[in-house]
Length: 314
Ligand code: BDR
Ligand code: CA
Image (cartoon, rainbow, N blue to C red; front, side, top):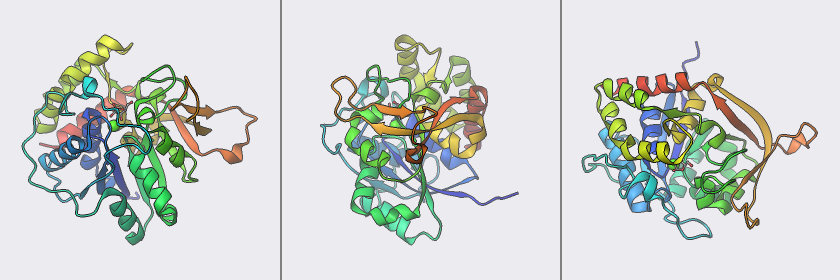
């Protein structure tokens, strides 16, 4: 059996589901997390950075470098989402003050250096607005050859959550997303089509809590208001754990149904600004395909994986 770990760098705007994605990634023997870069999104950069440092430290991985990135999108003003993630960004969950500090390099320099120095290609896993990744690919295009692929959470082929067609991470920084989708780097897009099927019901949350671990307690607490918001405002019987789906794709792609497509960012449309326009037509020019678009998931297995991740933190 091939036991080689997959080298990854995550890019996060922590965020409740970002925190769960980090917990999942750090629990997996299949992943070698070389670093975590941070961007503004769910909350302002000072908060998303603080949350990321807190999560990494609290879950015993202070050895993983955390680098601070962009504090605003490329063109638009920052639109944060305290209504979903709370004023702190982690709902009502409270973590101890982190003992670790951010890396001395900014996120883009950290990404550049780590990619340049790596003998192997590294997979980037952005689960927030794509500002840091767009800056990296624009300023240092030579590092593309060191990127295995980008496995991201964002967009949607057939649904939006900010309006009918636009997903939050794309909504916050559509211009950055356009740069990334047009970069020539191969993309796995875990958008709303799959992440809205990746939810935890109250019964599932009680299973996480019943692990009796600090991760189970954290998830149950962080999901409180987030869960209520989903159940009250969406058609779901639970809360979508969007960002953990990108990590799940790396670990178990066989649980996820996906189709290749040509994906373009609309940055001009009056009603469709920020939409990921996905062309699946059989007679499209397939040489222009730039992404594998995830569409469905075995939800039961996804929830079991989250439970297993929590059990790891005994
Ligand atoms: C995305 O937006 C944020 O609320 C989540 O962290 C996730 O990355 C879902 O649209
Ligand atoms: Ca996120």
